[in-house]
Amino acid sequence: MGNGYLDDLLLNNFGGIELKSPLFYNAPVGIRFEMGGDIDVSEKRIQQVKQRAVTLFNAVNQDNDSIYFVLFMDSWDEHQVVDFENDVLKVFENFIDGIDLKQIFKKEQEYRYKDTGEDDDTVTIRYCAKLKVRNLNIDNLIWAIANRTIEIEVSSIVGDIFLVNETKKIIFYLYDDRGLDIVVENKKILKPIYEQYNDWILDYDREKIKMIFGQ
Image 1 (cartoon, rainbow, N blue to C red):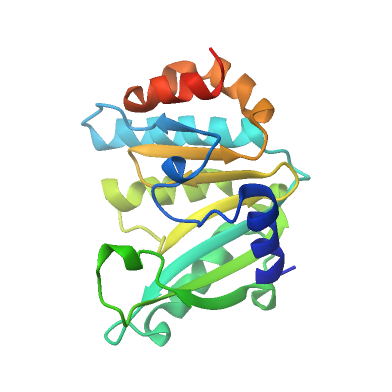
Image 2: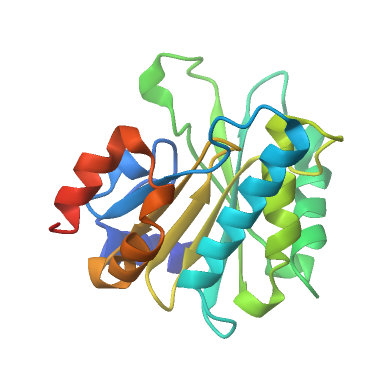
């Protein structure tokens, strides 16, 4: 269940959406949540990020759901795959219980941000593995992603990570300690989340999100 299945899922259920920032603005149905808010103290900020992100993840995913753990790395002349691949594999080992490295599928693709005018020689490497939600160490993963920018300690995370729920057709993307995007095929899945966690929605996008959910 490798790259081809993930490509089919994105094409058939999300219109071929690219897994890249800003995910929320590239999807017809989704919510952008504020994570760290205006908390300046690092420890308190990371605690809030973790609490909100884990709560939202558990609200839209169930233990037996099948998900793709997708990690992107960019490669160029001075940043070859051989320089970072061991670190990538450690991410899968650290946050997925019982992962077999043979289950990780690798695909080289066009640089995701080629329209920014950066080096044409840059390519993107996509790594993905399929697993059950129950095998994902979500608490530790969220902490590590948030810590990468807050830097309480050296983060064990490399790359850009997306969690794609094949069972419920949901994309979950904590881009850093500032915000989290949840994108879905069917807005009925997100409506209860919109209502229950409305206070966490990023104010900048609140009106757009309100229009999506018909309020």
